[in-house]
Image (cartoon, rainbow over all chains, first blue to last red; front, top):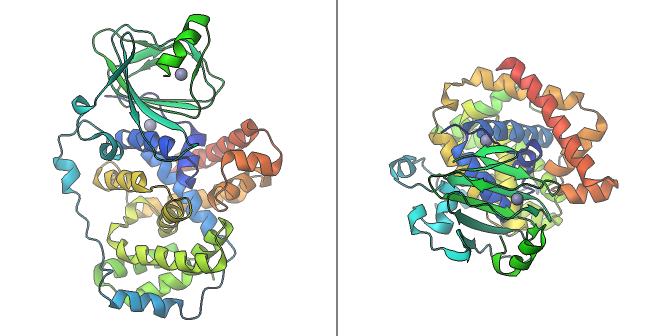
Length: 220
Length: 185
Ligand SMILES: [Zn+2]
Ligand SMILES: [Zn+2]
């Protein structure tokens, strides 16, 4: 598996600075879990944060601040965390770690709702109103996602299978990090269904009339 | 006060992790606590809230000291991420769990472990150089995003710029840093 489509640089900086909302943070984190290259890029971006913090004008802290912290240490409730990295390595999960808490350990266990012929959807509730949507799509081989413009940013991470659009072929680990200006028509490659994780800022609006008629039911 | 030699911060972190050395932690505290508090104030906390959150952040620095990996980044960058995660959890009431998950994977992955600390120190220096050379209009956007906790759209509004301009300046700034880093890789 070779990842060829990565996160936009502006997205890397937004992730490193903590600017993304929950839905986009999950999609980015799930890509990072699958992509050494973007993890390295995030480390670089976090160095920017370190540098900026290094140069900030210091704010005086309370004169007894350190003593207070030492007193908290003495309660014994604040022992150092030991590093235990075995649990993840031993897992046979096919779900990236940042997504496991939300959908479980295996893609096979996800429950799907049919929203259009060949298109199944699983919504992931993020809890907060007004924030971006997070959901998964399971699209059958050869199916086209109706053509749609984007009402806002859209980020799609392929978890299994592949689709093709004017930007190229997107396979497992690839991310389509698209702003509101991009229009595309993904078609799932023959062979196996394409399962992807999607965050959108606002519900995607379809372009042509038939799609628009379908939208109230489809809402992808 | 600035610590001119970042290896002093690293040595202190290692002593905190290996020996629970409180003198070493006091050194880190004197350096980071006023900076962490400043960042929290700039992100919108009140004075008393910033003091409390700073305490929590520094407590996390102590508790997670063993998770700091010197070959992967500077102590500054690591403490920045601890403060950023606290901001997400406590000020924004969202979850920083995805960041922890990614960091766990980072520690597990053996790609970066081939990098040595010398290389890493040079990397942090290159980042500093690149940022020092940025035009003010790009530097300001980086500062608003990383320190003042402003979103790209808030930055656009504050500076009366189109969102696209904010994004392209961010990309330009990042691109400059990246080309400097590629020169050492
Ligand atoms: Zn990537
Ligand atoms: Zn789309």
